[in-house]
Length: 264
Image 1 (cartoon, rainbow, N blue to C red):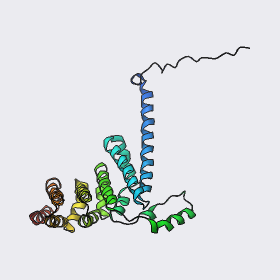
Image 2: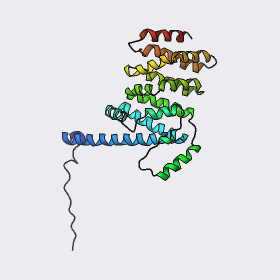
Image 3: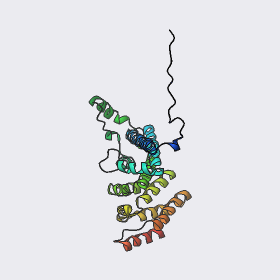
Image 4: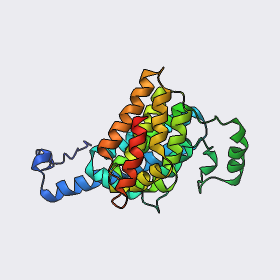
């Protein structure tokens, strides 16, 4: 008995290029693609945050690289940028600012891992390994500063959040203490970004309150034997004067502080 093979007729879509698809089909494909990209972004944020919180240098740096890729994607795609901003709202569990500030403060972030799927034995094992965790390195702080800068550029409201969480004071402290020129440059760039636009006014006020411009000016004066360090400090002060506007309620006071600092 001979078997017969049924050959289906070709689909009418096979002969159409994507540009010739019906509008409804194109809209559906676009919607599915965007939802997939959003899920990928949320998953990448979760994985990156878990690595950054791990307390081990190699995982932290891997996490920063992953998160930087996410922020980079958000900075080039308006729709992903909109979704990223939603993920950075106060009620979100995927907020970057609090975790990055913990890294910049040099605090152990391992205890911040909270996974509802993790059993009690795993949590005890994780906490028992805390003593073996690596101290926060300047490389991690540099990565965190660059990432915080990117977050604040994509999501301007994060500047206000970071300022209220003590970012200005933390960054200034690290600028004075760090020994790596690359790390110091990243810290100063981040500090400048925090003060841009109306969302940056709380950071501007914090700079004035902590005499931050004088701190950088003093760093400029102390770095006579390090041309790169002097250049970074001088660029920061020049960009600050050119691009950062003081809050409208106290323009004179901000200018009074900038004057002596620039002279230093």
